Amino acid sequence: ALAQPVYYQADIKPQDQPEAVDFIIAVDTALSMSLSDYKIQGQMVSRIAASRLLLKKFINDYSGSRMALVIMDNPPALWLPMTTDKAVMQDALSRITTFFGDKLSDLGATLNLIYKHFKDEPEKVIIVITDAGVQVGKYSFDSAAKVLADNGFSLYIIAVGSAEPVVGTMANNNLLYQSVNLKRFQQAAIYGKGQLFHALDAQSFNKALQTIEQQHRKPALLTKPLKLSYAWYPLPLAIAMLLFLYATLIQAKPDFQDLA
Image (cartoon, rainbow, N blue to C red; front, side):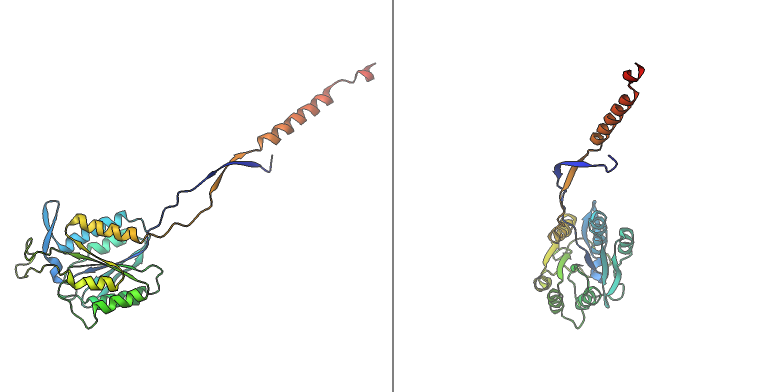
């Protein structure tokens, strides 16, 4: 009984759920991202504001463990390295504005920066959020995307902004409206072994993020089924108690032969 024996009756198979991978998120901060052609909760908001809002919601619901944040500017910058702290990620996103360093973005240099900082990561999924505006820099975006793909990265591009010639309102009266140029990134997405999404509205933006996450979920680790066990110590304990009781009764029984 002290050994606490058990016997097994049935198997309990655990629920194996696939796990989300880590993400590297790059947000364009070019001046064109201040154009307001998104409507959220009845109000026109800028591309950068919509990106911040929808990314914060995505991070809040994210089931993975780590994320990193990169600023697409001229020059680009690592805004936040891989972290498991969602509150830190939310705060870093809330401080992103347009025109950090220059009016334009260097996309090729941004991808090179990502390669430099994250080439040793086991999971290399990049989400680039940009309006495909005028780009600068000596590095070809397509070539940089191919280098990433050759080194195990997957590049996904979410193009923000309307493709119509004139939509929404101007965030700056001196800023000419610039529609999103989808052709600019179609080839880059192919080279990067990823996919191009066009976020026409908040719903399609969220759907793009969810699709990327679902495509890169890691298979769950197979675990052995658990055994449904029952304690068996009452049986030997009961037998011992019966033997003890029997022995006690035998010793307490009077010896009539001695009395005679």
